[in-house]
Length: 143
Image 1 (cartoon, rainbow, N blue to C red):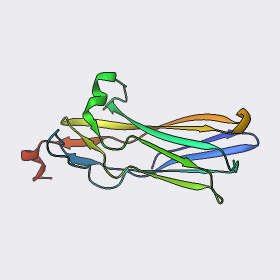
Image 2: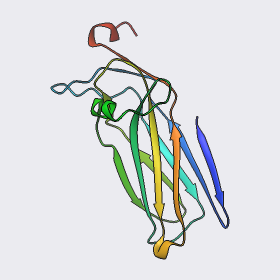
Image 3: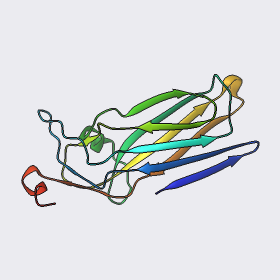
Image 4: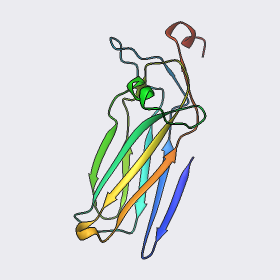
């Protein structure tokens, strides 16, 4: 899976997509359909500040990895997860209820924001999933 290792001495961050959907059935405003499989990203780090705040948000990209503000309305579900440090520090960010309202080929972009107390360490890391194929309700049964 996709992984980014970011080193900013004395800290390191390993932001990784542990599992991701590769296909799904088109969601709609009246019928929420989640993508197949789990969408799980993890963070491993040695930054143990107990009051550090960590946010992971997800955005929808087209199949070429380009962001378009108008496409964001097609992404359903929980798009932001907040966590606080705990030891040992491998945090799981599970996005179990994501759905996409438009057929086609898409990617998910995960952005991690970490802020430490007194601005000791502020980090922003981006990672992009592999392509997800979203099928219409009629054609989905064949996959």
